[in-house]
Image (tube, rainbow over all chains, first blue to last red; front, side):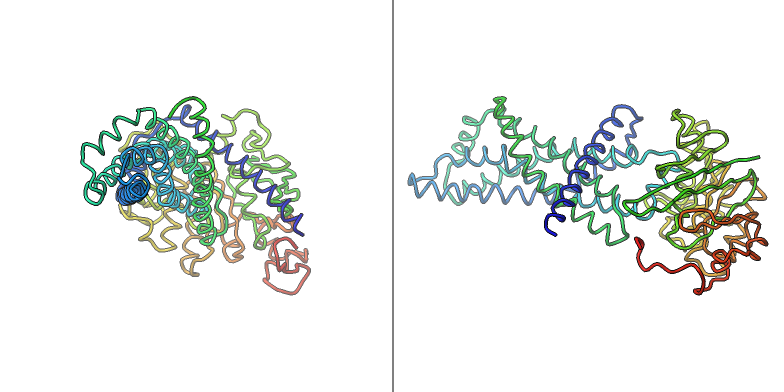
Length: 260
Length: 257
């Protein structure tokens, strides 16, 4: 019984991985081969970029604030004064928290909405209808969403980085009593540009994960409203897990190449 | 003249064999109705014709092109573009207006047309289905019958040679259903198209069909004119068209039984 379950699970997982890889290949091929529709892309870019701003602002602001608070008080206990708060906040946000949290917020917001939208189109036969009207659904629906995620996630991450560092700054000067110049010097003197590049390169991998997973879950939705709900949940859970797993491996790879 | 030839079509989903050797000929200009119980593979057969599903085995020849075995992708696409498909739930694009829905296929399949020409065709097709002037409405503002009619206008916009109807009257009240039936007959007369209809509504089938084919357990078990089907000797067909729960067709409780 358990063996059978594991075997089915394993077979389904391998099958799904293969299908996702094929979808990614179709998406990338379509980007280079087919006519590019600027209007469709702009609509998705606005949706992914602009609409995510409020939630990204709030999350990164508070993450920066709590990082400064925790670092400041921990270092006060050890060194009797809050040393290197700017450095710790800067490193943590630029390398890890900015890219990873933005990707997770976007997967919850945009990944879910892409999966629900495409899933609804699938179960109401709108995707079949596209095909019968001479339109490739991957080009018409998949590519604009994929490209928009791919280009907007790094932009959102840069924005989140700035807001997070500002959050740290707020707490440093108000609660920890660190002079403004010290905070900025800690950041500017100790953090090189390759730290930021390290973070941004990772976001491209995260964007590909969020967009491909959401499109895959949407395009393969089956079974009416319940199926759409299942596809949406799966899109979010699978992309979050994949973001965290890939974060380790991509970071290790970048470090091995001496970036960051 | 033979328009569509389906030979030995097989399709399996997982362990569930849906089509087990469908053979069917459709002649130019006729309305062919495929009847059969729910889940017998009627829609699956249609979807193979237009390329929405890939067959496991068999051939479908459309005007001389085998859309399953041909190696020329251009030929297959050309054959598939001869179809207009009316989906069961109309499948209108929610994000576009009614007018844009009808224009959608024209923009992709008829690149030679100018914008005023496209708008002209949209207007003409909406009038043809009895819904003049609804171009700017949203699909969500339409009733079920109106959605079906807009779906039909969209399916015929690029002047296809074949119109495929997937359960056109399902879910409609009898009067609206009859209106759709009349539209199907009308399209046939006005546009001189070949129609393939899938339904389990026998009132509709008798009214619109030149010939009726019955699909049972993945095969076509009888083909004939509406009168022949009405007076059939085949016990399976007889049970289905008279709508009786007593007879050789046993109801399956689960799809995989």
